[in-house]
Image (spheres, rainbow, N blue to C red):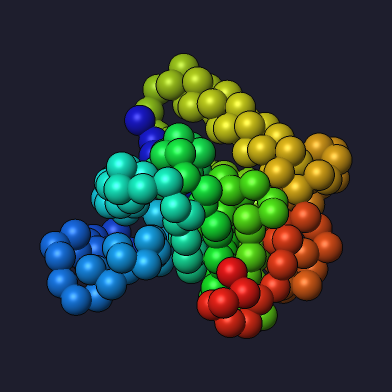
Length: 202
């Protein structure tokens, strides 16, 4: 079974990435007290588990707003789905702040918050495109996987259309190839509500 990806580097080098530590330390304690979750790097199941644990712990602690800062090239689609859905599931208002690049599955996660809660820093870039995958095996299995990729593309495109207010047909056309946007263009497209420069603006 193929793990579908939504990222810029579809091939990769197969190297395992170091896990983000969940152990408590001065930095982690500071982030917890400020109710801030970081989503940096490739989206995978380990990251999804860590972010889910942090969101649930913070929601259990209080109903105060949670800040999620995203800087990601994308990654595993289903891991992105998990984080996207947990942003709504956890309860407290989640404020998204994009920085660096918010690409592919990273953009999918970013769109998990309502538009009014989606902000970015001035130099953020956004990338939308279709999920892709490859599969080897019997012809019948390849056909099944191809059908699932088509369904996934439609689902992701409909989510983008819903969250940005763009017509579905336009989203389909835009995401056929890599669709890059700077902060201002992303605001015009409906991905971002506000471009901020300071923490007190969030």
